[in-house]
Image (tube, rainbow, N blue to C red; front, side, top):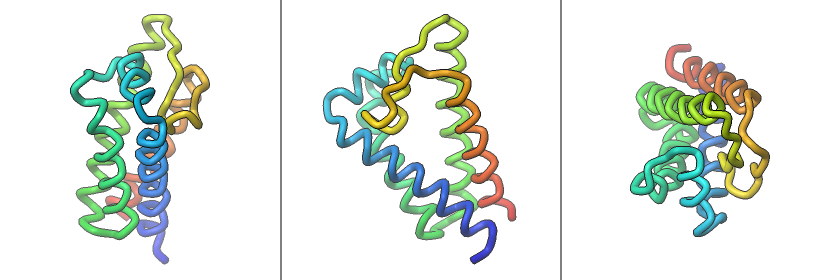
Length: 125
């Protein structure tokens, strides 16, 4: 297995887990997403988008494009986190549904940075 394939599978698995956990959270997820600053119309689509993106990455389908989309999504998620932190707000992360109920913090940005780096490896290695 090449480094790019391994990185793609790791990032894909993270997206699959995140999307599945959000769906498992049921009606709690859209409220949690709004607390993070996501538009109400986008929240119901996010878990499904994450699952499709994760599946593409794990299956190595259009890996470069999927990995770059993952980078863009992770940058948007990071921007939402930074915005809340700069406003002094620390809502629950909910990045992985009810499994991630801890308030957002800089460690969430570190996690996203690692996933972004892996996605870039998946795209360009």
